[in-house]
Amino acid sequence: MKCSWLRWLGAPALAVAVPMFALQVSAQPADSPSPAQMKQRTIEVQGRVAKTGQGQFVVETRDNKQVTILTNPQTRFMMNKKAVRFADLRVGSTITVAVMVEGDRQIAETVTFVVDEEPAEGTLIEGQIVRVIGEDQVVVLTPERKEVIVFVDPRTTFQLENRTGKFTDLRTGVSVRAQVNVREGRHTARQIVVPRRGK
Image (cartoon, rainbow, N blue to C red; front, side, top):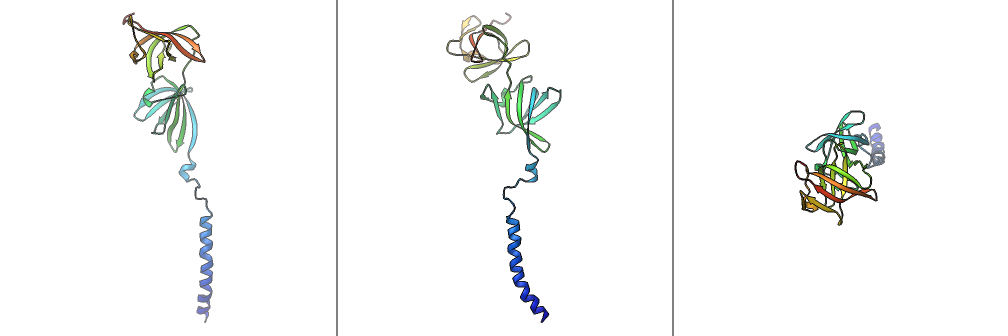
């Protein structure tokens, strides 16, 4: 008699207990972050590029620490508000990096080139071209080891080793002399001269 009473009571009790358990499980947010996601955080790293490699680079910060930063297909590279490429990273370039920290890995979200803009209006910029960007910019590394973006426009003239040239004649590694004016915060060349070698 006692066993039949337990069996009679057990079925309704089980029927109530199962929905209550399901309710407790479903009450947990479906999109709650996993432990791995909770460890993610974003930081900013500033400094100069000390080394580049396959899918990664090393930044030397202002306090002389070296930070290895990874890249992925989503990493963006920006210079003067224009998109550039990983290949444009050069040792010595000054950059600011928005970094996603995932455990012990640091992955670049955005890499922004910091370009010195010291020359005044009507200044002669001399140095070596370290990057050609798009169809209207070159980055010149001056003897003081500072990178300056020089823009061209339809009025810019080009002289390559005593002959008339054009923007597409400019190449990485070539020494140049650029007469620039400052317009809207940009250094725009009136003339770019590639001197003869040895001069």
